Length: 243
Image 1 (cartoon, rainbow, N blue to C red):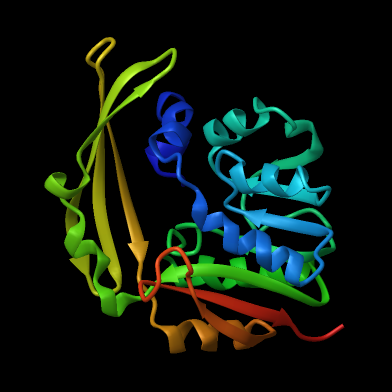
Image 2 (tube, rainbow, N blue to C red):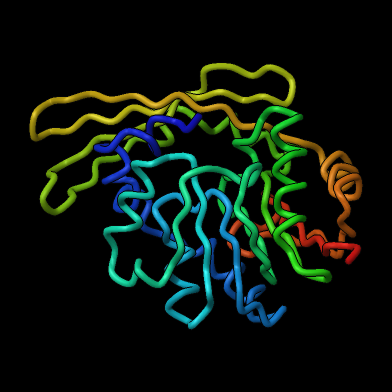
């Protein structure tokens, strides 16, 4: 299941202009260069921003996402014909062989169920060539990022060409152990429509993630600081073991 901000056509259409700064992807581009990746699987590709950045550099990319509305946005972008788009998730992929698999932004934390998480890691492992890498990020739970998720800190109005002004804000709705839930609200000035999207992220501990990776056939090569959010996020770099 995908959240409304990814799965609702009107919200998917404004997702990029409401979050235009994707400097977080620079680190992933550098990692792709570091490993000389020529074939990449982008898990949870959303509206295709990262997949298209890679394709523009001559990389062969497969983007997979469960939100059809987001994929429709991706397919409508310039250069989208260079990417293979798959509606689904990493638990049931066609035969692939890639050098690098990625989960950028919140993709890894949105997989809250233990079984789905393990199946996602297993699916990524199956697509990677021996020695290929899986790279993803997760917020450091010790930083308690959710304490800043409130209307006062997040409220903004964005003027979007062809759409008009859109108000948006985020409110925390609950914390249950590692599960943190929140609601995002959007108001379209053009017609007054008000849409909401409820989401839950899982804040796994570092040692738990490393154990899960090893259990699914990965060697944890590195755990890096996210350069755009130092001290707040962890970037896991894992290498596929076996033949």
